[in-house]
Length: 144
Image (tube, rainbow, N blue to C red):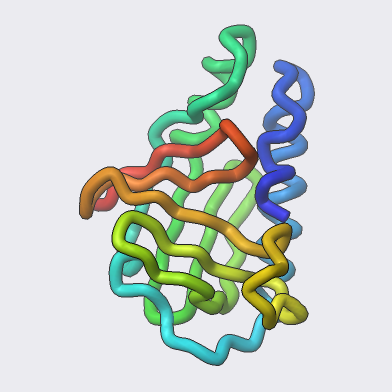
C-alpha cells in the first residue's frame, strides 16, 4: 500500500500521489484492530528528512514533502502527519528483526505472506530510520 506512495515521481505528481497514499494509509490505520503491542524501536516522534531513490528532477520536491512528514508511534498507535493533514490509527507488528521492523495496517493482512500490505522500517541506528515505500525508494526519518 505505502509502496505506491512514491510511485509517481514526476514533479507534478509526486506530492499529490504521496498525499493520497498517506491519506489511504491513515484510513486503513483507523480501521485496523491490532493484536500485538507496538514496537519499542518505532516508539516516539520521527521527522522526515529526505527521500532516497528518486530522480534528480524531483529530488527537491520529494525532500520538501519528506521534511513536512512526521510519524508518531505510541504503543500500537501511529499518527502520520503530511502536508495534506494528520490521521491516527493502529498497527500490528509482523516481524521485529535486528535492523528492521515490519508492520501491517490492513485489517485483512493476518498472514505474514501478504507482503503488499506490509510496511518496512529499516534502522541505521536508534535515531535514524528509512521507511521503505517502494522498491528502491525510501523516506529517511530522524527521531526527536
